[in-house]
Length: 134
Image 1 (cartoon, rainbow, N blue to C red):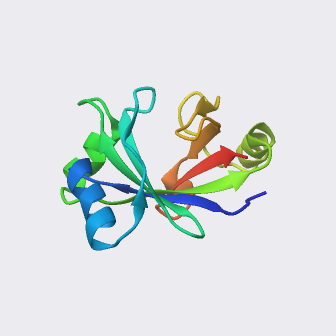
Image 2: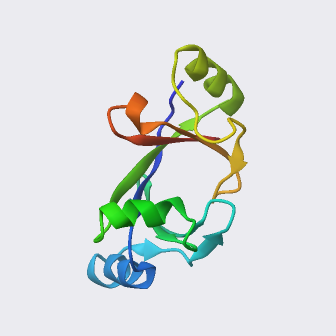
């Protein structure tokens, strides 16, 4: 079911500072900031040869990242995103196996313009998993 790792997401309290660190200190290519109101975040992608790192900053007080940063004020790994060929088939297979899909269970459009779903971290050893259809 799982394809390659699409990205690893890191929640940050200051997106501009995190972007500058990856760009200026680590020498990485970093995308422009992209607000995603439907997900409550602003994102930047650090482009690597074999994957991406997504830097997430809350977009408003209701953002799920706000609660994460309240527990982790300096930031930290938020989720890992895996690619899947058919997100609806993956959802149905995971649900049948007892995994909990967060939200309504219907895919939303993610930062790459493709359908995404999130799986409950308690079902995957404390790790929030995002699935993205490719």
